[in-house]
Length: 472
Image (cartoon, rainbow, N blue to C red):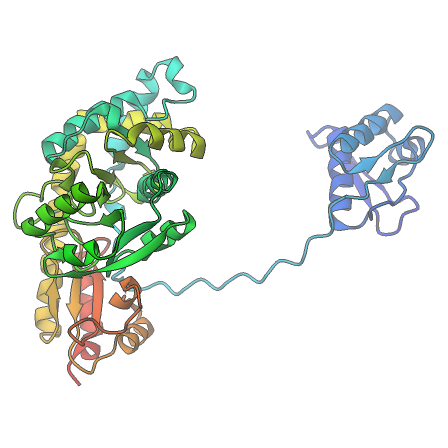
């Protein structure tokens, strides 16, 4: 049965309902708390006595006294012996009116956003199996705060996997499990900064988040150009940087692989300057013309910190990755990880270890590699048919291509006009340090992701914007 009480305070209405399962004291606490938060009870305002409030609501005085005591403990009320109970001077102020909700962007018929894997291809059945097995097998003791290096089973499996598949020199005690690339990169930057590194070189064009994360760690970034052989090591040597982050297996976003001569030159640079190479093993799992290019870390394990994740192989939502550290950095990186979040989810780590050990992870990669190859072929076919003047490049690995536009075609107008046709296109300028609208060849370029698009959507999307890609 509902009870309402207004008392002598304007705009104060308290409602209790005996038919609700919530205890009356909890209801009264909530009503008073919300009245203070909303400003109906102002700071310093005097409340009715516990006796008067109890009589008005038809409840015991003890219930009201206990309610006042609870709100006093939370900082909402001030109660003094022999004095009235008042709203605390530091009580919450009324909240500002909510900002109008932003309109949702229109759903695109074909979104060529790069860097997004096939989200529908996530192996839900296999992952559920792994989670069930992890829940059943994980010892109770390992449900507490984990080893800052990460789950021992996962590090053992990763060590064998990286050695077998990526050609890395991987020992479990040099692996630190992290929550994806961004966290792993941030941990490394903080450790390097503590050891005197003030500059980190980044690829240009490259992932703009690398520059932002370095700035947050207090490090200066220096852009180093990328050409058809990958990072220009001679230009790197002239920067004075003692750390560099790059994507040697499949450069983001140009798609080139770091040439063998550049690999050797880069390792020599690191050894001469006692520098650190941060290897983002970007798109290494998906190579179509040959076996994946081996990890750079295998050439210089004492100078390379290799970062890998399952964001592309499985899904970004899992937030699981790893750092294969040089021996002299492993303990410091693990300590930073411990301070950052006390460790990545232990149950998910053990589930990933089971998934990889069972062979289901490798089977999933083979299946997705074939699927992405079909989508890659669909993009090449669609461009050849509808936009023969556009040359796709960087297709040997991963699931995006670079399309150089015809002369006199600007990136901005193509992207804008395509959006009006419900097609998402993305320009190269977002990856360049100076945001230049055209590349070194004087022509605008697009970065076309096809990982999260079916073949039919790829064909329709390219057909819809074909005239925008034609020479003027």
